[in-house]
Image (cartoon, rainbow, N blue to C red; front, side, top):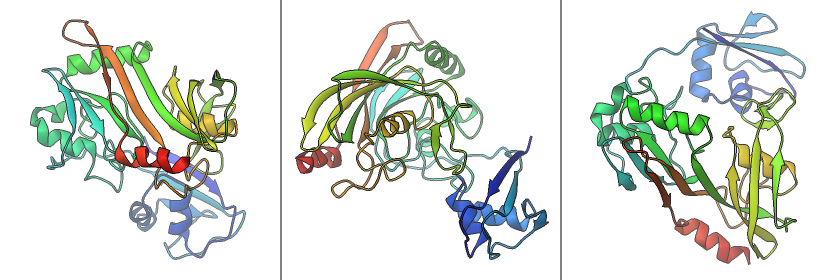
Length: 297
């Protein structure tokens, strides 16, 4: 089923494709393809990518249903910290996208996994084989990947029933108080910018818990856990209370000493699908985050 996206132009732009790229999750190349195929209307009429847009114009984008695509295996290095017949636990570096999407079909974690485990191509569809949860591109840390359908079902149920332990380390701007607390607020797509999430009344329930580990200069190092797993949840919730994650250009602002957000999935625990044994793994901070702590003082 096609997805319909409607945008009301908020500021004049000299290019239609550029404006849509800035307000959706799609790449500019994919947007140009949609425009060429007549799937983008401005004021009810088709347009060219180079067409300008003015404030208050209405853009209607029809996104065709995805066509099954064979994702290719690519020899990309993986830091595998645990593996058995059912699953992989991978320490993902920042900068690596988890799964392919429109306009970005290569260079992802899924492409790397298929090279390591060629038999996984049929699990959970052709685009996201084995993926049961995800991390943002610029969030580093632990992620578990299923190697067969039974393992995928087991891990998915544990996530649904909130039985998986996930812990994060986050450095935020300012001195947060009290020493521990919970942040609640429904999260959904931002009403004006589809590249962002926000606390909105129509969103899905979300709860984030934090404990202060240390004050570092004008910043606070937090241990964070989530009861729910909404897109950008930690980043949105911390920003909503006035303590954005350091380096988060989307929800806070750029950092002088870190090129990406200071968010690291350092702890991951779950029950093995094979025998029900609970296992837990930890990941140390990457070099850029360690250096950021030193520079934050």
